[in-house]
Length: 347
Ligand SMILES: C[S@@+](CC[C@H](N)C(=O)[O-])C[C@H]1O[C@@H](n2cnc3c(N)ncnc32)[C@H](O)[C@@H]1O
Image (tube, rainbow, N blue to C red; front, side, top):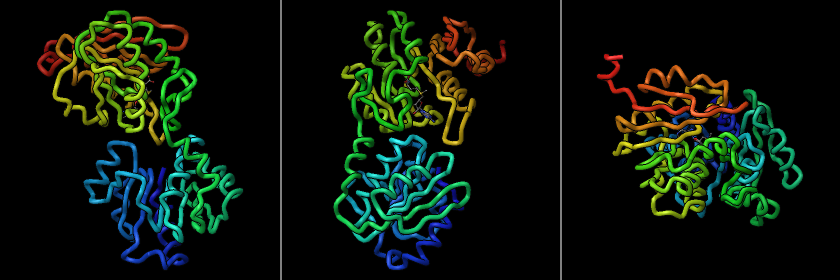
């Protein structure tokens, strides 16, 4: 989302035209700017950082930025990076507006591909855009907060909070398949039929559909750990799954060595897109995480679009695997017995 070139331009603009806001006493809030380390190289006062993603928030904390733990504090400067989902963007802008002090500025920045142009257009119908420019394949807009009333913004605030989706689960804009159950996950859930037991890990659990089905259809499951890097997804999952067997772990898939226990089974509908676009390596890192966190006789049940090339990775990491079932669009792969270092020498 955020680009360093645009960020540098924003800083220069604020220094030139909004000088009164850049005092050592003032404070700045970044919402969803991807690379927290960029913020070390800019000259804005007292930086706070908000992101629902574990890795981003962890990095910002390590770099010494404030991580606000509620919505109450108000900032002279709020800079929000616009995400792709229109509803998520409107919810985020509304929250950002609420976080801006009376007399302060709200800055929107984002890539044109993510639709920042149309968000600025919508905004221009309800507030005056004080400054606007195109920069580094994106746009920047600055709004002066001149009223304490949040008016139309208050209706957009609903987009930044969980609500029931079409299938009766709590979800919210910005989460994967937030409006309804994902068809690939639906397909995988049809294979849950008292076939899984013990301690299970749901890798990339999202708002919890797979785990909720698992707990209903596999009575011998002792526990299920829902792991996701998005805090909002886990908040929704906690509301959707009211079962003492469920545990929730906010973690990035690449830091799963910290889980402490080995699991009997893993279930997964791995992502293959990140903020830069299609990324099969991300999907593969979920297979690696399953491999690292399963017992030696453990198994992974994974669903993927039929054309996605996960088989080689699975072959390298598991003693055996098979296509459990498939249809025109999706395949379910069942992989058994993760290879250990010493096993690699044998096969
Ligand atoms: C394809 S969705 C599946 C969601 C859910 N299991 C379902 O079936 O609806 C993949 C999930 O992986 C999560 N995810 C993406 N990248 C991640 C990462 N690096 N670490 C942990 N979780 C990640 C996303 O937030 C998303 O919820």
